[in-house]
Length: 359
Ligand code: FES
Image 1 (cartoon, rainbow, N blue to C red):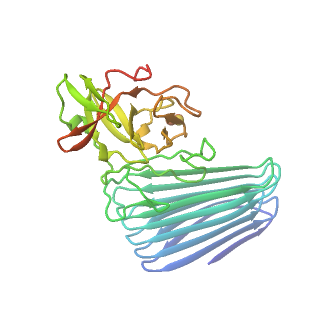
Image 2: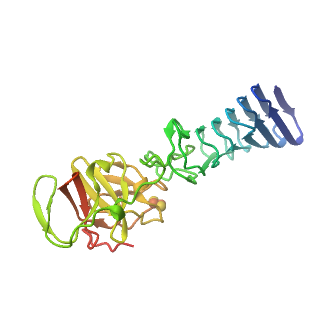
Image 3: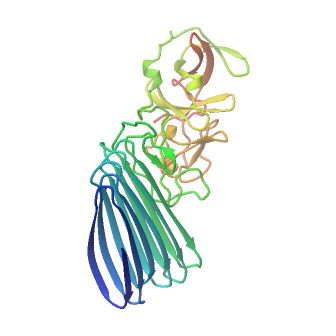
């Protein structure tokens, strides 16, 4: 079905599309209005069991164009593919809002919008909302928005939001951009704060990962066998053995991933355990910019990155290496020991290496 908008007018519309079970519908909107046209439209789509909707939206003209596409599913197996292309010129405002409600299991959504802007005052807004409900097991989802800003004076806003209510992951489980989701709920940041960072990228959802398939990372220290308070012998990587009396077992060394941190509880503090080669580090599991666990960020080059705004913290010193965080995070002494079941990581949260008082 092709819907083509041209001419000069003020246009307000509500469109409802029901895709029957097993059906396939291609829906094409061409918004090629005259320069003074105003267009506001809501498009509601319900995708039937094992049905497929493909929507193509082209916005090329108009003074103000704002469309909202809402998709949900009438049963399992449905697929929604939403593609958009827009080109905004000076003074034009184009806004595309998308909401995919994964309210049925084994459903798929794929949202890709691309745009270009040029001229003073050209403004585009893309909002991609995805909700994965508790019943929606085994779904796949992907969102992408890219913008080409061709001249000064343009603004492209890109806001992906992802909320996940299900913790039951089966098979491949929910995915964003091919990466598995392993978190019960996430509200993703609207924009990258640090260009080129490994954290949230403008226009792309940030996938929060947990190594445990149930989305629950055990706070290993709570279940760990507690050592006595005196006389534990420890060996640092490299071999020097120390006499200690206040370390507690945090986790097994092989539980610590190489590219992200492991969140554990040691004593009264949540601690992020991370490694850089053979070295193991422990920092308080709390970004100093806001209450975000650092263990959910990525680890690289002896830093851990806060996923929310992209500040990195040096694992050795705890100092932030970039804004917006300005305060260092507490670093705790670590020892790597040979235990009965293998190599273990022990942490002393009774003191800090960098003099920072844990929060
Ligand atoms: S919460 Fe902002 S950098 Fe961590």
